[in-house]
Image (cartoon, rainbow, N blue to C red):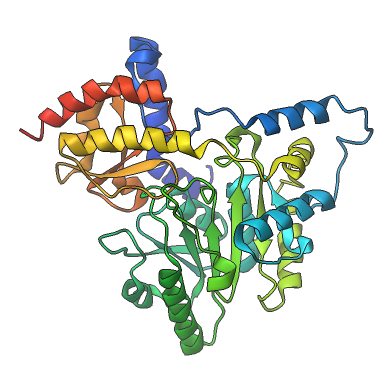
Length: 393
């Protein structure tokens, strides 16, 4: 009666959202302070003061026409501000015309995939990966293929070579990574680019690298995020201000197409066409103006580091195995039992909500978000200790 493919995929829908809804149910029973919800990357932090002030000033402005349509690619001045921000962050010049403002990274990814994929083209991701990528690819009529990572959650280049075929059209990378928090170093990205070149030569095809970068400004311990434009021949950055400015509900981000891509202007025009015809039309007008004024701002990363260290150190003391995250705001924890779903259910008995690793393509792990309040993390520690004693005697 309804769309068969979507109906079938409802049963595979996000573990993250399922745990989030379970959290709401438990909070209604036990009270919000007695439930420790580490399930969803929904920043507890408020946006930086510059963002709030900008929003206030724009909302109170007497300028006329602020709520009208603009170019489907977004305001020229906003795109210039984003291009300047990329220059400041990566020392890389990109024309503002190669920037398209999007309704968040999700819309940016879907628009881009819809612009480069033909039916049954393949998109490669590396474990662990954000599960929604599969649904974006599905809606773009492509097929998701999963390559392995090594023991440090870095892309396995040999696995990529085994996974790539004549139908491979794109690779999605996410660094800092959700859920592992690792940052792919430049040498790894350069090796991946060389592997992509080999596949392109073998099959006489073009492969695009889509870099999903919402956590690029949330990095710790003096780590740096390499510029994908300097590492790949055909790179497209898809970014969002949901995390760096704590604005997930505002749905604002951008697509940045490297000028080195052959026929980049045509690709941009296709992306702009898809932005309009897929129903986004353009990114929201007022928040574009806020980004124009505030895109260089960022949340208090040291505060996130404080939360990371509190949760990470306690988990390690309890006996859990974790690779310390270099960025983003997640811990990817080795489950103390082979079936991590069993561990997820046991954690719920202590009102601790975590997400199973199979939702990220890696059974045997669980993800915990430390973007919750410091007080929530601190209050959860005795419960985590009790949970750990079930497994580490």
